[in-house]
Image (cartoon, rainbow, N blue to C red; front, side, top):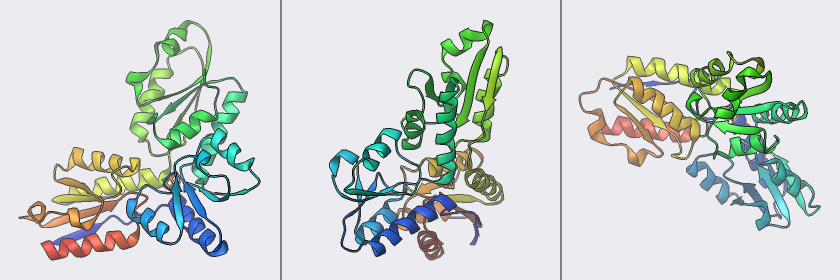
Length: 286
Ligand code: SF4
């Protein structure tokens, strides 16, 4: 069976940077306890490997009063960050991806300029919670799509308004544009900021192209990874034989019966070694 691998599959720039910073911290501070606030990336296998190097996950900054703390690639809330920075016994290593940081800065600036801020994304995702924390709580909200557009916003059609629109980095352009289209007929000013990460959209486009050319698609990545789940949904919409797995052991031989070509893609948090193990296992099963 022929295997086609999406060339942009796996670690993106931000994740690579976060993992490298974590590994370097373990080397630079061998005698100190190192924590990462929330999983540094959404891949349980990588998190396990980092734990073996002495880097421990931490749910809340309230749980520690000293040590080295690494901020995950998709950021934390403004309150959490300042709480950590204000503790002299804590050294903060900020591995927030520069693309996420830029979106946080846009929210902070739009707050200063008194815009109603709308973020297109999953409201309970840590990245979105982080973005919301940089805005004014009464004028910053997250919606998953145009159907969640609040009546208050639409009601202001008759009055000029100031709306700033941005997106969680893993959003699709299609969904973001649908929300933007709802706002354009409103009177006043709507500012749209493209905060979608190209690493995500490039990987999505390449994966879709491979999904149309193959008999089956395997999408590798953490089940809690937003970008992997999105990748799976997009592939599944055009290739019904699409399967989301975290580890090679989850592959099933029956998926490959009578298949001639299989496409492989992976989310931004999936390491190269895991992709190689999956390819090896598919070759064994077919
Ligand atoms: S997916 Fe994009 S925004 Fe997210 S960590 Fe990677 S490079 Fe940064």
